[in-house]
Length: 240
Image (cartoon, rainbow, N blue to C red; front, top):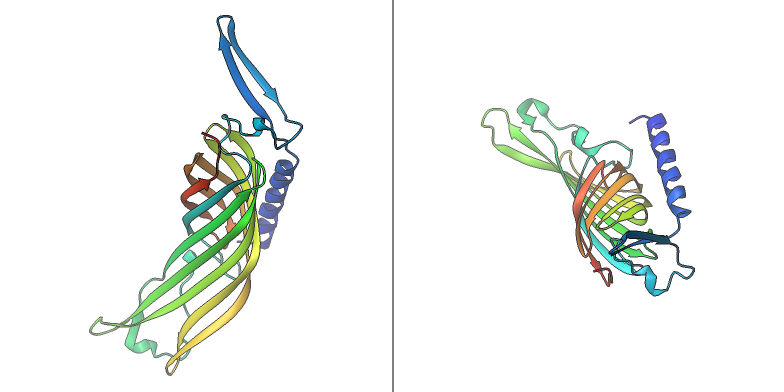
């Protein structure tokens, strides 16, 4: 991904988050009698009033949230997409006697969030991405060894929900933290290489469906992937 595209995507995320930050917690109720249906929308003066636990919203303030997900297309410390790259760091290995299979990457994300109010969450995310690539003998096709790489990162995450209706929520998020890259290199033996790097993640559009238990999907760019899907659970959520 070019630097220009990355900058445009970052600016879009910042704009969405700025809009969400300025949003006020509005609540909508519907009443019905023999004369018809009435719709009332209001903004509580005090965020701690009983009206903040609106049954028309997917969650209540001061809700804890746990998420477990996997991703496609996570970016490494160079901003390159894992799934589009091969694991190549074998240096002086004798390629004439072997050939290599494709690289496979698997990612898992574990997140915690605390909803300060119904539209703003702060928390942290941990991501572990595993890369594997097998080498085979040219004649016997026997597997000779497996090249490995691991990326482990921890990031504070801020999430801003700019649409909240019933059991659905649309949001954007941003994170910045640290990561460790671990590689197993074969060069006259086996070496372990470890490098620190800056981990980042921007999700321009995310959606959750459900209240206490929910599923979610996100689209963006960074350590947590271009596409991120998973499930989650909310604790102490008073919305029924």
